[in-house]
Image: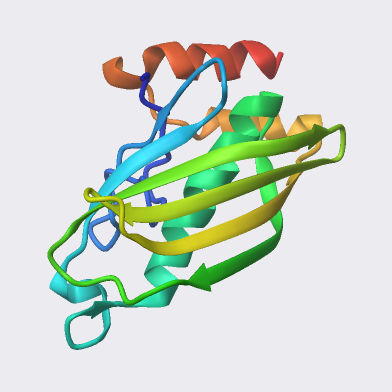
Length: 163
């Protein structure tokens, strides 16, 4: 699946943010499903051995906003995020994050997301409602995306849609 572009300072995908997670997100161009892998690290704990729920919610929000953005070819902002923690996510596990679009309307895109282990254990689920930004704001957002060979196709598609 093609890799999605990123902004320099994003807490989730920003490659230039030394305090960020620096995740690479990928999209299925047909379904708008977004996936990423996250190796949980000690510096992301809430309690000893357990990943902070806010970190998991942040990653889910990022994946779901990208699913909504790709589906509508316009950047979105979160209007509502509901997270359910099924069980504690342990440090040191490679986690899979997946976000899917459930419904697309002109002013609202609904998504779902999951955080699972490679063995299928579900740690966290979420639903989100995302609002597409105005055309002018979308163009500004697109202009902040970093040109990178790995993301050239998806960046081109988002730039073309913003014209």
